[in-house]
Image 1: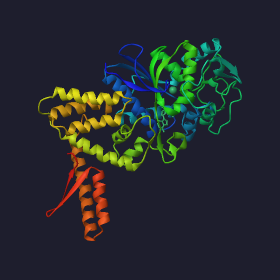
Image 2: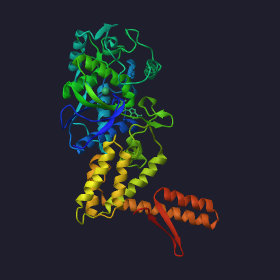
Image 3: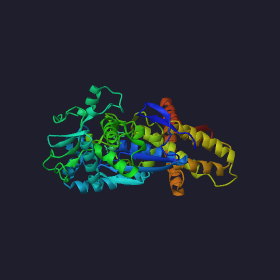
Image 4: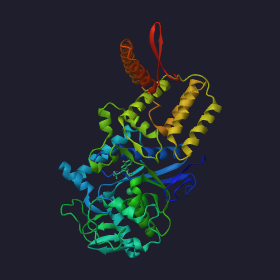
Length: 472
Ligand code: AMP
Ligand code: ZN
């Protein structure tokens, strides 16, 4: 099997991936909190996790992947204070929590489909597993890793040898990260302790409550991922993923309670995706002002353009969203679709070239999922003097991982792209001719440059101005 190296938040370095069981990967992903639409920042994380899963499969691993759906217990602040997000969503829309959960879970899956994100093999809503959470919490109490205070059950972080394993931030920074302008919970013995079970619901109107050995209540957020992971993947997992905001406190707390429960190391590799930012910083649902896949569609962007936008940058770097950059991706995408669509399944398959390009592709992805460089392999092979059959074979193969829709290109779509492009370039050439007539050469040059930036070169001759795609 091809080597795969990626950055492990646990060890803070790029490491060779070695699963617990040869050839098999057990992978857990924190799923969405379904009180609103997923925004395109959330979806950046799910796109990159999809790439990770598909790449592991591409190099031959048998991947078993689980994702939870958070439909209870995630409070406004990740540090267990504030209102339950689900309740907030229900109040906003004057619906029940379960109605909200169903609606936004379906909306999330619909977005995933549009973005070519495969839904993990096992999906588990938290509200399906209350008994499992109760069992795990009971065991933590029995082992003295948990205590009851103010009618809630808490995890006691002082019982652990090391707590801040997943973060190199100072304690002060950690607290700033979670304070979020809400009051501190005075029941906690140590400030990093966290709620396992809200026995006395903080909210009179909390809709979802269950019987438990500690009274009627509902689970804390962190317990669901540890418990759901163990339910389906057992006591050892290979890779756990999420966005970087999950590192603390969520993933740190998952490690604390899981390892206290099983009594040994739980997960070997932690994969985290950096933020998608907008002009004001991290895109987040709570800010209210966020972008969704449907909004992009309403502006006539194919969702796969957004997927390609994400793949053009490295998952460990912050990515700033702008329509300008997205527009550049539109022209790159259309060009690519057209060039692939023009290939005929003809000629001999050049096995040596297949091996050479596959080696390049896997070298890039195998080195901490360098998706942007993996794309350059597609551009290189399309330029190469090899048969269309070889090109098509390689592009289709690589698109099993990249999944930007290069495998089933619709001829109508290509004609549409051709027509749109023709109209766009013709209008730009006319605009440039007008500018030249006015002797406004600065504007004329700016138009030439604008086209060049979109990969279009124009040539002037006695007969008039013609254009061509660069590298076509
Ligand atoms: P949530 O629905 O808030 O529980 O988040 C779902 C996933 O999206 C988690 O893995 C988060 O870490 C991730 N996430 C949240 N905001 C962003 C963002 N702006 N950019 C990338 N990932 C994010
Ligand atoms: Zn989680």
